[in-house]
Length: 318
Image (cartoon, rainbow, N blue to C red; front, side, top):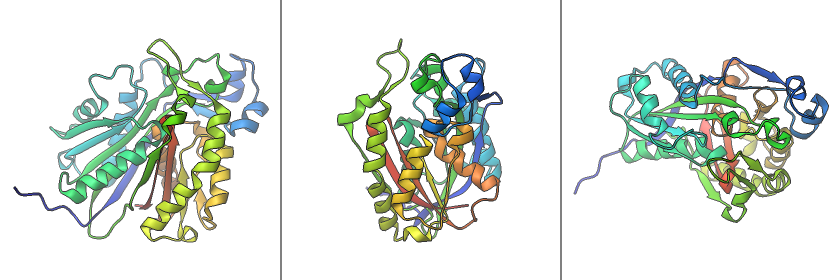
């Protein structure tokens, strides 16, 4: 039996992102439910978010973000041999998202599968892409996080409708002579899985906000620090900290505990809302586009959410 020879390492070559055009402000929501701008900002830090229209699916969002990442990478569609889509909001589980997205992007016959680790999904998918390249199972991988959360949220439930939004982010991962994606630290707290759930296909998303807040602000900073340790990186060396954009108070609490004193902290939550598996690549892609982080600098990613699942790794910013 023979095994393929993989690359010494893997790196992200390019990011891309896409948001629907429809901007929904806190004042817009206040016309639909009993809430107001001050209440929303004080609890979750969100000022506005994007909602996809009824004609725009999570597949459409993924195609837009994936196409932008592919264009930014300089690779052709034919160079991609594996597509991984992280999502937890498909209207139907069959067929998967990855196969449909690949076809629409003109990627011919790649390996194609979905990952459902909810808000940690992008970090799970990125780790899987890196491992596939280093094992020789793939050469160039397109990783996409895409969500249309609004189709699973009850607009009258202000515990969720003010938080969740729609969007997509993507990354092209390629072989590298030196590691550009550090070891992943991942895990789950299944005993708390009911804290974020959709009971059945006729139900909307339900979240126990206080349970999630306490767990996120106490259990996750050691995971992020361990990801730095495994990568051989001091948190003070980080150029960016890009956690899942769950809640501004959660982001700020974790950032303080990590010790990333020189890092730019992603706060995309303010203008994009919580986009689950899309939030990390969406936030980092926008930071790169705005020139807020240096090419070649190190970014710490930390995904966490329903399951309860979590994952963290250090990457080199393209």
